[in-house]
Length: 292
Image (tube, rainbow, N blue to C red; front, side, top):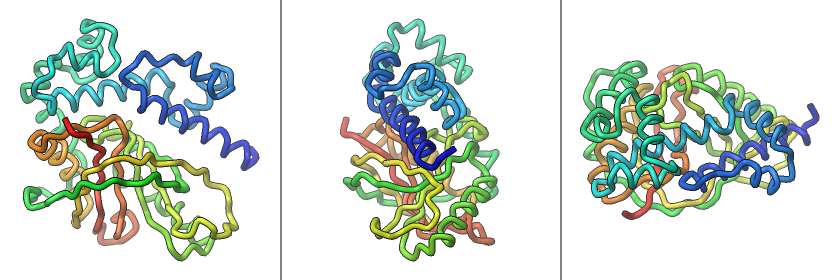
């Protein structure tokens, strides 16, 4: 496939995903979206599935249920009916059925503490460090982040296999002799409530000098949307990041007076644990938020 064609197809898939995040609380019309992007619905579905590994409707359902799972915990004064409407469901009955199918419990059971047991089972699979970390000492800062453009490789799964993707990206950096850049990861799925093997993780290189001439143009680009984020700084070893994410969603967010938005969270690395033999990291984790 030509570079220009690949870049165009990747942009279409990313535009669709951004559209889904933006309008997740509405009745998303794929016919209208295909007209807006000037592409047939058939090709739209095919391009999206090739890029993300699942079809558009599966992605919409997954994002809606992930948002609902978070809102059930953080929105203390919203009813289950309210949350079903906030996540784009036409009826409470369809929401209840979809939620139970996905999380194996009712929204009420989830809200009343079932989320802790569910996420603990996932976290235990990846956490290699049994020590308890006192995250309460972390004081997040509230920041307004600009739109960020990066070159990326998409990875399915949230485990040590991510290392291979970062090694490929590091090879691309060396090939282009890039001196100044940031390493960033976009979390399309929340790893504490999405089965690890299904998580969409995106490894991204952000160039400090946009005018830099690249020798290898094989990687597509994406835009991480601007927004307001809670920024959490942490250093540690492999397995500690998912513990931080669990604490952020299930402790800090509940007590904060904020709620998270449908936009993906992301990480900016100062030291990337996937690229050193000690598996140590220094990073900032950015959670998209809004005032409740």
